[in-house]
Amino acid sequence: MKKFILITVVCFCSQLAFSQYADSVIIKRIVDETMTHSTAYENLRKLCKQVGHRLSGSVNSFKAVTVVAEMMKKAGADNVYLQKCMVPHWVRGEKEKGQIILSGNKKYDLKLCALGNSVGTGAKGVTAEVIEVNTMQQLNQLGINGIKGKIVFFNFPMNPTYIKTFRAYGESGISRTRGPSLAGKYGAVGAMVRSLASNLDDFPHTGTTVYNDSFPKIPAVAISTNDAEYLTKELKKRNVTKAYFRTTSKMLPDTLGYNVVGEIRGSQFPEEIITVGGHLDSWDLGEGANDDGSGVVQAIEVLRTLKALGIKPKRTIRAVAFANEENGLRGAQKYLEEAKSKNEKHIFALESDAGGFTPRGFGLDMTTIQMQKNLQWKNLFYPYGVYEFAVGGGGADIGPLKTIGAALAGLSPDSQRYFDIHHAATDVFENVSERELKLGAANMASLIWLVSEYGL
Ligand SMILES: [Zn+2]
Image 1 (cartoon, protein in one colour):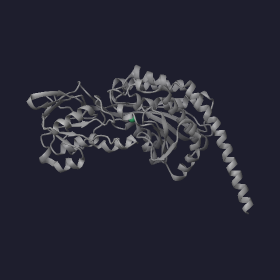
Image 2 (cartoon, rainbow, N blue to C red; image 1 turned 90 degrees about the vertical axis):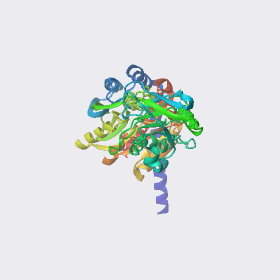
Image 3 (cartoon, helix red, strand yellow; image 1 turned 180 degrees about the vertical axis):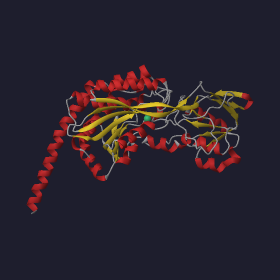
Image 4 (cartoon, rainbow, N blue to C red; image 1 turned 135 degrees about the vertical axis):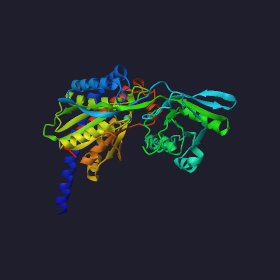
């Protein structure tokens, strides 16, 4: 009996070793193809330089749909189609202005921008005394007596000791997403939020703020991290009398947006769908190069690489450029709706929405059994710089697919530089490295191929 078990184990192990060797050969071909012939970088150049930013509802957002659909066709997708949805249409308006008024009526010009989805100040702007808060608890403690009639300055620096910078973004992010609305509840007339950035510079970073409909909606801006440092210092010296800012941003009625989908039909199990994607929309200050033009062109590159190698995936692979991730997630909702109405079987979805930087790993959100299967593949990625298969991950656009049973994954690139440029004017094509972008795409293509071959 013992001998039988031993033989079985040896056989199983050698079978596994052989299949891993065979897989490693195909993965090397995939990586070599991407690193040699990828069109991802040129596609990104086109998206950033010919189209530019792609804020939902903007003229560029419609141009981008046509350009990306064309890219998917060129990559060799069997079928390219659009999914139409309604998206919020927020406009920034005129260039924002703002100042700190110091004692002796000395003025300091702020580098600032309106927060996404925020209301404007009106033509005159708002001028009021400034009060700084560093935690939400502090805001609540000050309450109506401490806040009414003032501009609240949310100074929540990102914690530099968190090596995974998304953790710091998550923690400080509440100042931008929930802070202004809560300040409105306590009677504030405006909110100034320290940009969610890891570095100190002069570029304000935008991003969505969320109003609670039961509270008064107040105008809200982000100021650069350098300005936030200056303001807190002057407040401590009691040298600040007031602050002023003017924004003309507003929300227009909902308009059209599109998910762009490019598909390679599975050869054996076409009804099993694997999604690989990023989001097509971006903020309007830069070019949405890292967030998330990179993810979009990497997803397209997955299709191109497999096609170029003549690999016929057993399961259906879909590259998706999602609409409206930044200020509404309507594209993600639409994709789920379509999947449900057609009774589609979604087994796996992978998103790249953390920048086009050097890939380090994948974050996985799936059952333990599926996780174990992924961990068996981990060694295959070592030669290509991907070492971490961590629990927890995915992406905002693919998140809803979990409700219909899809296993989720997110590409985890190195995150040290991401928040220097995230949602700022510096998120431009020049800040994406060609090799780093391609290596991310190569690793994504490898994981997508493994799932298409073996299922989950
Ligand atoms: Zn993004």
